[in-house]
Each structure stands twice: as C-alpha cells, then as structure tokens.
Image (cartoon, rainbow, N blue to C red):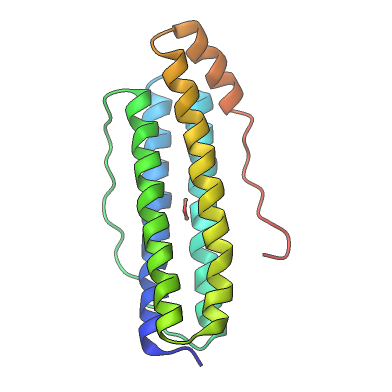
Length: 169
Ligand code: FEO
C-alpha cells in the first residue's frame, strides 16, 4: 500500500493537473475571443491532455489504496496582452509542472516507493515532450512576430492538433 506522504503528494498533483486543464481552457476561450480559432482548438486539446494526466494519477492512487481527496480548483487568469504572452505563459507553466513532477519523483525515492517511481517516469518523459512542443510553438510565434498573414497561416496549422488518449495508458 502507498504511504500517506506519497498519497498526499500525488493527490496534490491531481489538483495541479486539473488547474492546468482549467488554465488552458481559459486560454482557449481567450484565443476564441481574439479571432484565432486554431490556437483556441490547440489550447482545448492541451486542456484535455491535462485532464487525462489528472485521471491517470487518480486511477493510480485508487489502485494503490491511496486517498483521493479532490480540492477546489483555483480560478485561472482570463486575460492576456497578446497571443505571444499566452504561449509564453504556457511555457512557464509547463516548466513549473516539470518541477512538481521532479519533486514527486524525489518523494517516491525518499519513501523507497519503487512502484510510484516507475509510474512517475511516464510523467517525466511526458514533460520533456510537452516543454519541447510548446517551445517549438513559441519559437515560431517569435519568428512570425506581428505579421498577420503569418499568424493566420499558423492559426490554420494549430487547428490540426487533436488529443487522442494513449492506448493502454
Ligand atoms: Fe500535465 Fe502539461 O503537464
């Protein structure tokens, strides 16, 4: 059975993942209001992915006999200065999530909880991918700058991302 310390730490991360989902949904609404439906759709796919992360932790905690205790989700930001500022905020947020995941791994090592350590490795790899993916979007936005034709083309491309739940999660 999972230790109370590890259980509480994963339970807290469920809330952090739900907050990420909420934040990205708020960003999706902002992009929609701003006339960038492709970015809005991309953020919505990101929100679904965060929801999946929360569910994955939720299932794991139950499987290990831990205590799931859902907490209130903080209100996310609702306004940003520009599309670039939103994506910068996503990059910053993902960097914070990476630190949280690393802390969870440290906790698993402290608790000598090998099962949680193995479980969390999936999230360690996922964070590498998430930071790379948003970093790529950020680089391209900086290149596009204030060129509206470039932004329009990028918006079209952003609409292509869909979130597909991994098989055998
Ligand atoms: Fe659940 Fe984007 O990290």
